[in-house]
Image 1 (cartoon, rainbow, N blue to C red):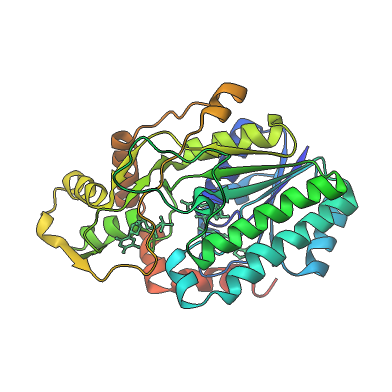
Image 2: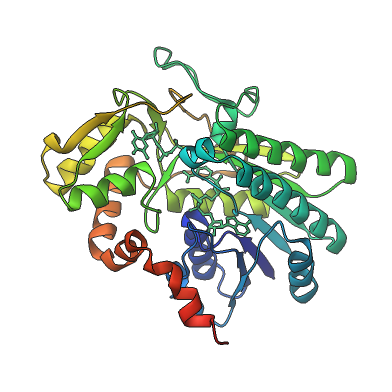
Length: 339
Ligand code: NAD
Ligand code: TYD
């Protein structure tokens, strides 16, 4: 079996590549990634040593490159992680979010249709549901919650989801979609809340918390996200959407304080800064459909996940220090430039 993983040099895609290679050693995994600022080949160092793994640099919105890849690989399953993923960047410059997240997904759908791929799985986000009020802890996003986006990022992801469902309805394509809450864990790019706070606290730098730090996110350890995607992509019902989350709701301030406690650093590093425009208040996921239909359960709770994540950033400093210095972007040129 051959699986194409787009965006596999990023945070969740990278973790998913390892999940596949470890759990299905007989299968071939092909990573297709454009290596934007968020993609890092170092993340795939270990995978590169595996004969069942291939890395191809390319853009999912580049029709010719994508069709060429499928002609070579004739994949059985495609899992699409490739995306522009940072809300703050989408507020600064929305254009690339539309090109990659929407047009790129369309190219993938077209190529899957042409080659009769057995399953196209779209990795989506709970942010397509908008947000929940802070004073209604009884409310959760279900798969039937209306799409109601806040940022250019979430709007582009919602558009992609709708396109995927339209290709299922119109062309009968075998698709599935998952919508997950916020992830954290190894290989997380240090512009997102948790790795940003860990790496800055390690250097005794100030920790910028937006607004009053009261916004709530439902945190899922990345390995649990990978197991859920794998289950849905292989066994989920075609044409269905599945929410992923495990009731680990925390305010941003609670998250930052947990990191500081783990690192034994003072809370005086916290610094409240101007809020994000259109800042979603609360995300909270009901994943009972996934649990009841496919028997999925998360394995790592928040306290254990934060401990493991802090430890990973302590043990893998060259990975994130090279990112902060920008030198990781020369890695591809150094490794592959003259090949
Ligand atoms: P990331 O930004 O860490 O990685 C994205 C990867 O996609 C990078 O390797 C990048 O080089 C690649 N990429 C970007 N544009 C591309 C293009 N045009 N062609 C080929 N490759 C391209 O993102 P992530 O946090 O790993 O998120 C992966 C997916 O999961 C995204 O679709 C995101 O919307 C979704 N998601 C993320 C979270 C989260 O908490 N991070 C939660 C739910 C869903
Ligand atoms: P982020 O990691 O950007 O994920 P998302 O916006 O997709 O949920 O942010 C998580 C939360 O942390 C969000 O409420 C914004 C907040 N945040 C800060 O308070 N300070 C920061 O420096 C960042 C990056 C995020």
